[in-house]
Image (cartoon, rainbow, N blue to C red; front, side):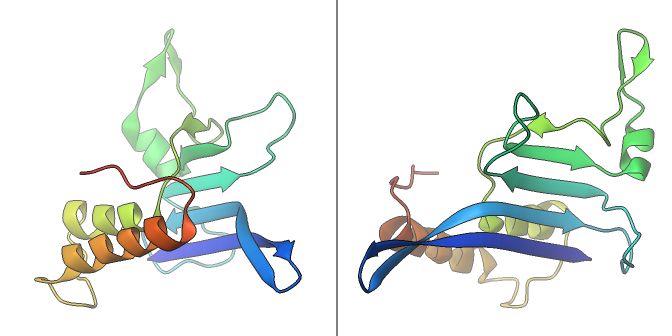
Length: 138
């Protein structure tokens, strides 16, 4: 099960022109149908203004089950990836969808033969119309 949320801020550029700026996003992957108290297996998050001196704005966190299953240690101590924020770059929703489809075998609603093309087109539209940075070739 997958959950996504975006919080955006509308910035006025001109009297009738605005730009939406992402304040935060959360992409959460759950092992089962989530309830309000369930822990996501994976969480990709962005927070524009993290606590002063705190964790990085773009990060990945593991849920309790995934962290225990990973069994990682650092300096002979268990590495708590539930409360640690692993730095990432900006994570596009298209990249999360690619992960879900290609790596986890989830069925795309647009069909098995078109999903890559649909995601490529979505990225192209974002880069050409909405982003200030050009898309780097794959």
